[in-house]
Length: 439
Ligand code: AVJ
Ligand code: FE
Image (cartoon, rainbow, N blue to C red; front, top):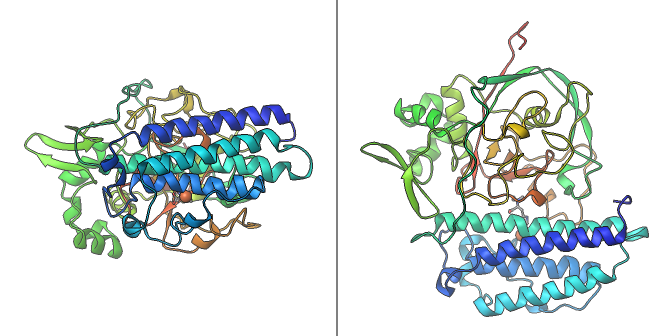
């Protein structure tokens, strides 16, 4: 951060905020009725997300960084995610479509005024610059949440995007060997890393194998077609109870038709594409598939070692391909496409060990719960991460096609309940290396 001039920091923050807002505007460019409707009990109405984005920005930038007076102190409670469960949000006295749009515009004007005036050097540099990065990531995270709401929305498609690139890696080996030993996990250097990614620390893993690519729809359909959802032996006790109670018989949005599996994707009904990573599966389903395949899910440290460890230097990279941020050649991110890309579509994004598509396409379930790293310090609030540690969550890594580059890196940690699948969640499998077994 200190290497950047205040002007550069300002330009970077302004560009990132503007890009996030363009996306929020596009995702809320629907009829008023669509904007206020609850498309699923699992999600907020889009108009809640929109005003919540403004409300958090008001708290963290306008009040905390700018020291300005509150625009709307009366609505803090309505947009506090801890005060109201998603299912109850439609009953709140929410700002209406026009009010919400006007509110986020007014907050943003103040943020830009503050961005012009904060010194962005000296004693408060880290806190102030971080606040702008954090607010950008927060908006992008809610944009991904709104994208998931669009996927649950009924009716004709309203979002459009070109198809992602096809596979261009030829035949890939099924799995990649990852050597055992210590590596650096987490970060103390990433300027925009959230509290839960910090600090950098050494973690040792045993040698293991990990899938070269995420599990595809084609492979997943074999599990389905062989009766995998009907046989408790592949499922954990909890997973089986969940599958039975909720009548789970395929990934969310899939249906069985005469000529095979179909799915609905942002209002388009289409044949399930065999070569794309499977998406919209819960942790329990991922775990059952892995058991059926004679494998298991990777732990969080295993995933991060596969993604970041460079055996030539022994250091951990920021991204699988190196230290530079993602370009469209590296990964399927940022809602540029409205679907995961076929496996093998991003040869430029491969990790030093040869693992593909770790960043982008689909969030990947790991077997790990959400816990603090040694030396963790809550920042800026306990409510961002700390209150979730030790809860009923599993870690997801790598981001999806709906995750913006501003909100993903090799150290980024996402978490959700093991039953959730309206998110853009997929997985890849791993296995222990047998004694004496090397690549
Ligand atoms: C990190 C994605 C689990 O969306 O619930 C948004 C991010 N935190 N607003 C979420 C977040 C506060 C969070 N996840
Ligand atoms: Fe939020």
